[in-house]
Length: 321
Image 1 (cartoon, rainbow, N blue to C red):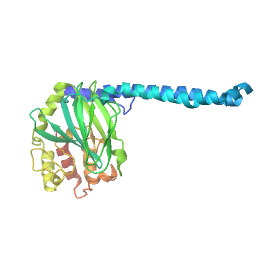
Image 2: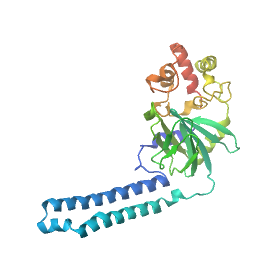
Image 3: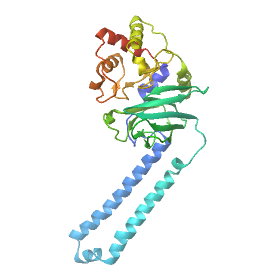
Image 4: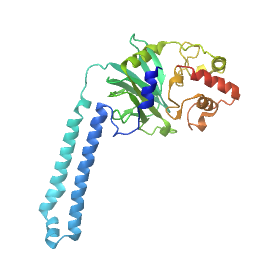
């Protein structure tokens, strides 16, 4: 990763909030939320005022509230007009989200699995490659996400960029999002999917176009040969222990598809679906006993390694960028 990209990631981390909108879809949703809250406030004010008059008002005021006219206006006309206005405005405001536009500049496949995110990219030459959990997109470009599920119902939601959409087994749903500025946008599975559902998060990293193009073009690149002795020892252990049966590292004999692709795990900010910060220490801890860090995840603990071997494995994985 370049210094420019690193500075972008360090400076622009957004909280996971609908009101922290940094995409056109999210801005419309935030505005609609404000309008709905304001409308609800007006309705509550009218209801509380009527209640106060019913309790504290004069006999004439109480009689008027109990009359047929008040019931027709307050009980029928007012709700119909208010709800119709809010519904009509909401449909008009979100009309662009409902429109089908031309083919997107970038399409990313996202498959929800218990309890992580499998990603599929296609580079400029039409070659595909896999990533996991951390999604990278270019700034200012509308991206279409093809959403699928490999097991149960999940839901893809990045509040700062747009609305959520369910991922249903046997079906492909499509969601388009655009980031208006560089930054890191945290998301979450928004449909209870069992076990460590609350620990199934993700991040979308929006990079300047040139930075994204460089990252995308490197997608088919084979993993580099480890530069230091510990990492070299770790690469040997990785293959000898059978880690490649579940995980893939491009350009090596590790071609597993059960677990996340680890070809560039060393450049991710977090591990275990945005659960714990990345780093050699947490890599070693997760290999030895991932259940203590993310209870219920499907990777068994590997207590067969000595501390030195764990450090070597972590050094190797941290070098994969």
